[in-house]
Image 1 (spheres, rainbow, N blue to C red):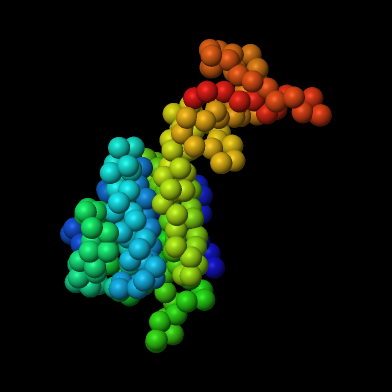
Image 2: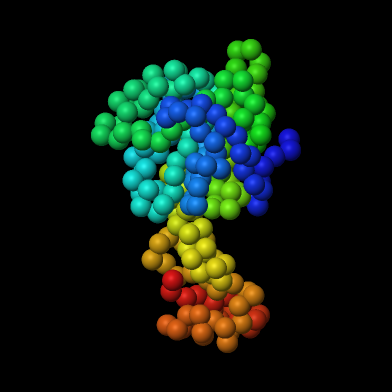
Length: 221
C-alpha cells in the first residue's frame, strides 16, 4: 500500500469534525499536531484510547501540540460517542476535535488503512495510526498499530518530547533508548568534538568502547 511516511507533507484535507469544518494545514498552523485514527466509534479499545488521550490533552497543550482524531463514522455518531468516552474516564473532558470520514477516502490519503480489518460490508477499516506533524506540515514520526493493540500515551508523549528536544537543538542531538525528559541526550555524529564543546558548555562524556571511535557522546540538554 503506498503511503504517507516520515518526511512527507500531510495532505491538506478538509473534513467535517465535532468542532466544525477543519482544514488540516490550518489546524496544524505554526506548531505541532498529532493526527490519530480509530477503526470505529463505540468500540472497546478505541474508547479507552480516546479517553486516555483526553486525559493527556493538557500535557500536550503545555508543549504546544494540538490533537486531532479521525474515525470513519459521521459527526453525529462522534458526538454521541464522546458521552461514553467522558463517562469512562470521569473528569477528563474530550476537548479536541474528531474528524468524520464516512466514505473512508481520507484514511487512504493519510495512510491509515488496516488491510486486515474490515466491516460487515467488507470495507477496510482504519488502523490505529498516529502521525506527529511539524510546523512545516511534514510527518515527523508515525506509529502504526493493529486493531488488537491499544496505543501507549506515555510513549506518544515521550516521542513528542524527543522530537521537541531535537528540534530545539537544531538536530545536533538525538535521544537514546528509553530516554525520558531530564536524561542525557547523545550528540549527533556530524558534530565534531570541537563544535560540541562550543554547543554544550557544560561538557559531554564519551563512552569508552572497544572501537575507540569516540562516537557515543552524552550531554545534558
